Image (tube, rainbow, N blue to C red):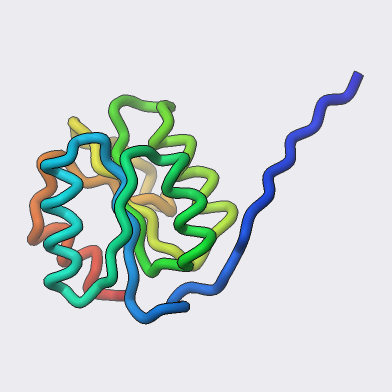
Length: 128
């Protein structure tokens, strides 16, 4: 028996509404702080509490950047980030995590330690 996997994805190019961002974090304080900072940098920001919720927003809005929370390796945040990288290659994906990450140099995902140092986030945003 063959099993398959399918996903309906609304894929739009980035920048449909100017500079936009998605922040997915189940910690309301961190989510609000990141959203506020991005708004101050000129982004239109949408927020949700989970990584999989963020996927539909990323598809609908085509943001320049999406910040997703990861609690531990291979959790919802990691899986959502992997799917987002495949489905929406024009959106810069940033994971926020509780510990530093030993990521390969060619990883498409940036990992920032929580609480997020806003100066480091700004460095990630400079190229957008």
